[in-house]
Amino acid sequence: MSESQPLVQMKGICKWFGKVTALDGVDFSVYPSEVVGLVGDNGAGKSTLVKILAGVYPPDRGKIIIEGKEVIFKSPRDAMNRGIEVIYQDLRLAPLLSVTRNMFLGREIERGIGLLKILDMKRMKEEASRALEWVGLSFDVKNPIENLSGGERQAVAIARAMYFRPKLLLLDEPTNNLSVKETKRVLEYVQKSKEQGVSSVFITHNIEVAHMISDRIVLLAHGRNAGTFMKDETTASILAQKLTYET
Amino acid sequence: MGSVNQNTSRTKQTSQLLLGVIFRTKEVTVTLITIGVGLSFYLIEHVFFSAVNINVLLTYTPELGIPALGVTVLMIAGEFDLSVGSVFALTPLIIVALMDIGVNVWASIFLSLVFASLIGFTHGVITVKAKIPSFITTLGGLFVWGGLALIITGGLPRYFYMPQALIGAIGTQITLFVNSQLLWFVGLTFILFFVLEKSKYGNWIYATGGNKEAAISRGINTDRVKIVSFMLSSLLSGFGGLIEAARTAQALPTSGQSLPFDTIAAAVIGGTSLFGGAGTVIGTFVAEFLTRFIQNGLVIIGVQSFYFQVYLGIVIVIAVIANEYVRRRGRELRK
Image (cartoon, rainbow over all chains, first blue to last red; front, side, top):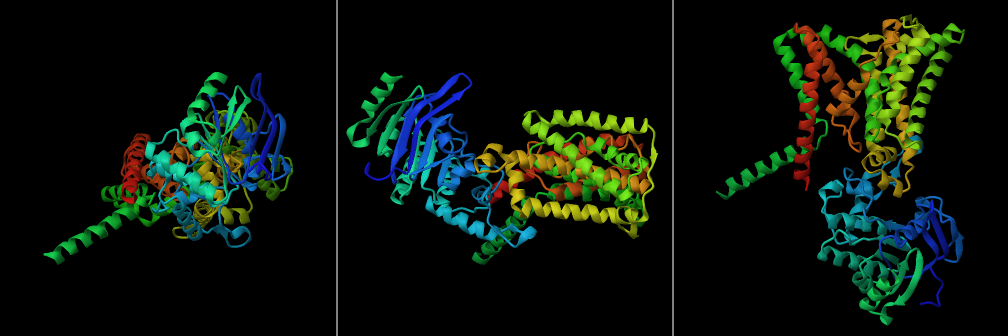
């Protein structure tokens, strides 16, 4: 896998918030069709790293290279246009809006010309239903998000991300508030997207889950790299030891 | 036996369907209350639904309703505007002041509406950049713009003589029940309904008020959405003020003083959420007539007009409870 060109390379990323150093020269890469577990304690800098890759804020130092080209993200939109989709812990869904409207938020399908462009609700509903099929759900996409269970909402967020054919999924603590059964489903989605050639970064502080789903695990501690491990070369308990020792 | 069962189940299905339609129509509560209130006044005093009285209601409701439309959009985007009354009073006075120094009447009208939009722009920029509640920004605006109106006039009313062409466009009876300001009210309601429900901008407005972080993470410039909504609110308040001044041929520095709370009341009665992310301009349109029904009806049936506030207060609370009930029932039926 390491012979191929990385999909994403982040080199020497630094980020300060006032006097607090969040990231201090972190290197991070993801290869095509790879699932990377990004593991670290609270405050290790996992979320900051992911937010930089998602275009939420720029790094103070360091480079982001995507498919061999250096990129500068000025906004989340730039990252999305490069095929990076984020699934945040809080899912970023508007509770009172329908599944369809949430799914196409910011990327609405329209019909008509000039000033008279209107939403093509019929097509968006069809596409939203199709996107839900991918996550194995079928319900009326006119439902507002508030009608759905936690697991269903998670699935909608993943379906939305997958619909736009990303190259890379960033999942920020995706299993935190889920039941065991729902967690299993999320892991299945990650596996399924991998089979379709989509890479994932799985951010978690749950080492068991990280080891189960990832091809490679990257440890962060105090804003620095604390080791990289291939799945086959390590076990969850070794990782746990390593993490405890580092922090 | 089987067919009877089938029949009852079909009837049940139909009634479920009907209930579903009723409970999913967001404007149903306010419409029912308005009809109920209207009928009550009519039963007490038939004059309430006489052609003359309806015509009176249709004449002065638009100027107070148009600002409420802008406030509704702004509230859906998650912000308040308490300055609407001051902008309502100030805008026609800007026209007077500009004409006093020799500016052409049409240019004055145009500039006054630009100025009103700039007021909204200012409120919006301060709110989003300084990250303070719009309640505070526009409370400041209420005093500043209201104060400016008093300064310009020395606190005295000004004559507001406009060219016939303008009066014809915004303040003229066309036939019984139809006047030009009503056409504006209906037209603006329709346009804003269209924007909110059928355009992507509407989707952005609902998302900005419903979950700002979600909207930002999908690449929507929520600051811009809010600023534009503030501008709309101020522009429509100024326009309402212009209509009133043109209709009554005078511009009062103190007019529109109850507007800040009247507009929020109309929006809320019509089903708009105080927390943003939900609401309809049609609901506000109907609620505006409900408010005027109560105000006018009490006078017609000979109750002291001071009771208006008491009844309006009761209606607000009842309407919000009913809206919440309907919303929950709609949810249950859908799932």
